[in-house]
Image (cartoon, rainbow, N blue to C red):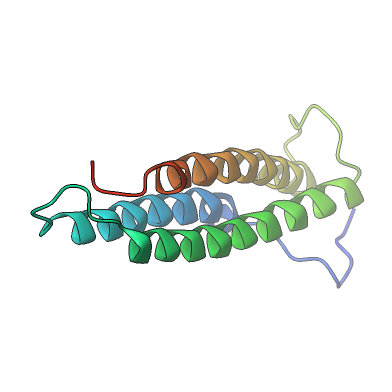
Length: 126
């Protein structure tokens, strides 16, 4: 079965994109919060700038992850996505990459939400 022209070939880059976005979001979120909290002499100083930056990062990360996840899901379903993906053909490998990308996108989406949760709950550097 050949792919229609409107579809792309999934690769390992597609597979690792969403966990990479999650990792970058994690790193930047905690760097922003640490940068703002490090020079604080009073631990009750608010971290509004970091909270806004983390909110923006979270929105961007969630949009990218949702786009990749939905694109992979759509292509998996168009290619008659079914189980198992155990064949030794290019189409079966493609379906396996698409479904794995969907699962990793879901995990990464939840991970980004959990990384952003402290910024929502804590208003100062305590």
